[in-house]
Amino acid sequence: MKRVGVIGGGQLAWMMADAAQKLGVELVVQTPSENDPAVSIAKETIFAPVDDAAATGILANKCDIITFENEFVNLQALTDLAQQGVCFRPKLEALAPLLDKYHQRCYLRDLGLPVPRFFALDDVENIKSKIEYLGFPVVLKSRRHGYDGQGTFIIQDFASLEEKLSCESTTQTSNQSLFLLEEFIPFERELAIIAARSVEGEIVTYPVVETQQEQQVCRRVIAPAQITPNQVAEIEAIAHTLLNSLEVVGIFGIELFLGADGKVLVNEIAPRTHNSGHFSLDACETSQFEQHLRAVCGLPLGNPALQCPGAIMVNLLGYENSDSDYQSQRQKIAEIPQAHLHWYGKTESRPGRKLGHVTVLLDNPNRESAIANDIAHSIESIWYPR
Ligand code: ADP
Image (cartoon, rainbow, N blue to C red):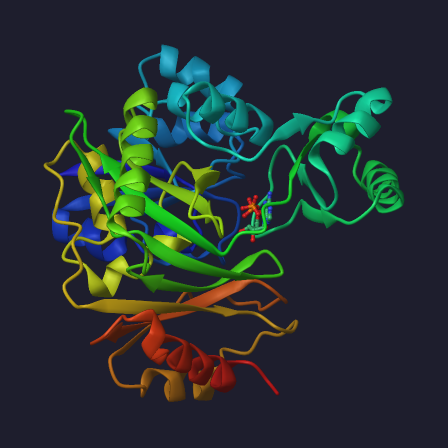
């Protein structure tokens, strides 16, 4: 029996529960609120914010290994624990180049991986010349702590950029050096791949998926993506290069852009399980959550292959402030043939908050058949008020 400490107690930790039970692993969670989803499945909870390294020290005393479902940690403070012998998987060095989006872009570029053109926004004098190089629209991103599109802004002209910067600098105690500026990619589709690496260095990858974002938030994921075998091979090679270079142990999610010219660019790395891999719970022999626990516990990796021709995953996002549990909508969605509904048990709904997801297994994933999109529309028309 291993005890795994998980920093973060959201739905990503909650979805490890079945796998933990299957593998005989106990989960101890560090999360701030007793209402957080994973509290109900944890053997024990340390109630503290994820960046509270002193609390992680207490967690470490109760566990064999510590892993992450949330990467917004205080890496510097955790380094002291690592030096005292606490086992982090993935190791802290694998997270270090990724937590700041500018450092992440630099790391990927230096590895020779394709990324959008980008700059750190540190020098007002040079903004104009940098933008001339990139051309409008540009994308302004907070370097740290961005998620679900928070901190990502598509900017159409110079006046809007100035306005956004001054507004962000006054609302947060931030300054320009906390932003990254990058070219806007007129992508044809967004893609993602989930990859796992074991303690021994074995790597497995899940099928490449298509992700569909609205207002920068993931709404749907279609597995597998209808792309060419060469594109699949290129994306798998990116995953191998990255995971080997960082000597990752565990799951990473890699988000990508596919251009109209067929070129692939890396958008973002999630150093943990990821929304684009939720389909694996119902559609694959080994889910990303089991795979992650296998990897961090030093077990052999499982089979990541789809067990059905395809799947579509639809996020159930909050659309109001409410404490409803949405019973009747959930019941209607669960009645859809081949649907598997996962409800995270959050006690409060807010616009954009991820409350649950549903995966529908498909007999025919062919993009042209439009079946996946029809299913997504019927789920969303039950879920969202008209
Ligand atoms: P987050 O970390 O909040 O998920 P991302 O950097 O992944 O932020 O951006 C969220 C979404 O914004 C992306 O999925 C994509 O739809 C859009 N986006 C981000 N960067 C670009 C870009 N350079 N060009 C075009 N769209 C972008």
